[in-house]
Length: 627
Picture 1 (cartoon, one colour):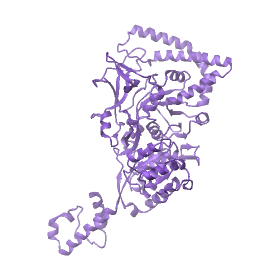
Picture 2 (cartoon, rainbow, N blue to C red; picture 1 turned 30 degrees about the vertical axis):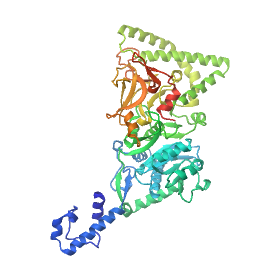
Picture 3 (cartoon, rainbow, N blue to C red; picture 1 turned 180 degrees about the horizontal axis):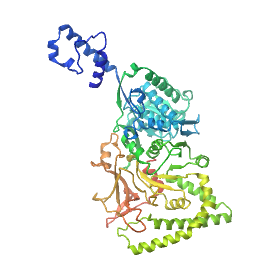
Picture 4 (spheres, one colour; picture 1 turned 90 degrees about the horizontal axis):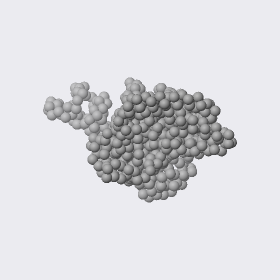
């Protein structure tokens, strides 16, 4: 209130109704000082009292406008584009990207009606328009708005438009049950809905109308004429085009009118402000709303380049649901590097891999297993000669890569004791000689067989697999045909990425090293003491990406997040020991996961043993919280 009173006071002191020629003061003692009252003539005291009432009324009329001063710098005179190190909120990235990559294509969404292409400048403007449209229809800072929709360019625009108002989006996909969506909506205290299309709107309408309070509904795709009108008279419904149109008009008016801009008290979105609520089973079972701040998400945006060194013009295929933290963080990150994102679906993945030839594919182990099975099917359905040649070459390439891993020191070991130099030297020489013999045959296989696979699926730089260890045979297969697949790990509670394999240290069977500014330790399940490298225990994580907590659930937060900021992942794993020589010398410090803590028993020896096999599929869907 001090800020608004001060600004209102300065403005009103110029008002002709209050000629304050004799009362020049930059401070509020003009109103509050008893000394001033005693010295003033009675009629001036009356004027001061009237002025105080006027100032207060003016302050009440002014609205707080939470915003990104980088994204909306045109509203503030003298503000230029700040460097990336000054980002305080996720929407800050769009102005920087528009300045750097302007007319480059940012995204292509070919499977929605209408099909959409946007440059970086157009994407930034669309986010600004959507954001301003939300303000026009009454969305306030820090209010929560449910975003129940699937992967599309308009999901991205609405997600960032909501964040740019200082509001908090609550995300989920359209395939969740009505009861689940209702529970999320009510528990999060959302005030409005953004839904994918008329199908979802009609599906949830009656239940939400009778059991939830809704200020308005926005349809991302389709027109209002296609929806049922059960509650139309009571709940305003807007199309995506209407929101962006309202926003465009309002934003233009603000830019043209200084008086209109002065109606707001501008407040920057803070890095510690909650950006989104993501509902997940969490690490302890029951559905919980994970509170992720702008700081959490910005950590991912600014630190994933070591894993995915994208450059302007690189093409990515977007396949995963964006309301999962994995896809979401990766999308934010890649758009800060001038890439081109193409939206696809599982149905169209095969054709799109061939037609768009992506440099990167960010996906889950299940997708790589599907690609593996498809390629194997091509081998087995070929003629007998081609099948024999392909399988023979594959065996040669597998052997070549095995030898290469040994002499490069990229093999896993739990052994704390370093091998003797003589043993290391003999092993290294044998691996080098074997690789040298196999290399010409491997290169021939690459030219005759693998080049056809490359032209069919692209992925010329790397595939990134999120959510835990790939099945070993899939991991080794893609290595053999020289399609790099980098495995990573994370949870929604950590925004999500905490570790991943680097392009230059892609140790099979592991989830790689911790990413920047991230600490990982392995502790004893009983004593919570830190274990030496090579010993199996509970994996704990600490870093700027770790969540603020579970929404309205301090008890659950306390169970997984201690007072020192360590997040209990609930996963069992170990860290590869440091060796200066030997087959694992380059693998020092990588993390290996082996199971879930709730699926283990503690033996009399103190060792942890998994009750169930930790399959790729279940791990993937746990760690990226795709439930």
